[in-house]
Length: 83
Image 1 (cartoon, rainbow, N blue to C red):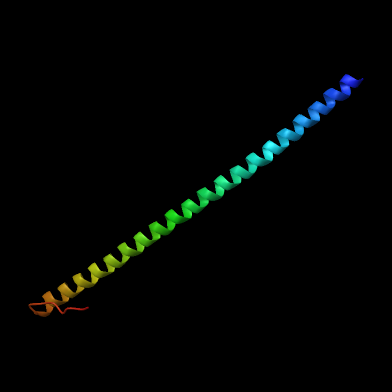
Image 2 (cartoon, helix red, strand yellow):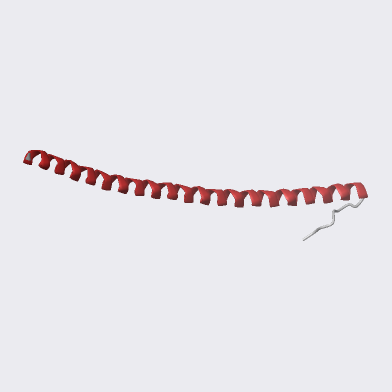
């Protein structure tokens, strides 16, 4: 009977160790997931900044193109410059 109690106690200790290890692994996985999310957010911010820069460049291009076309059809030899 003593051997059964000892074996039962040993199994309970192993279960406790495994539960502790599992909790630690779950916490580590959660940290990894959060780090990935932060990295993804940082990349998204960089992408949006780049997109904003391209949008501004495109707006400038269209403004210059419009001014050139207006100048071409109005007969002016040099387009009006905007700063």
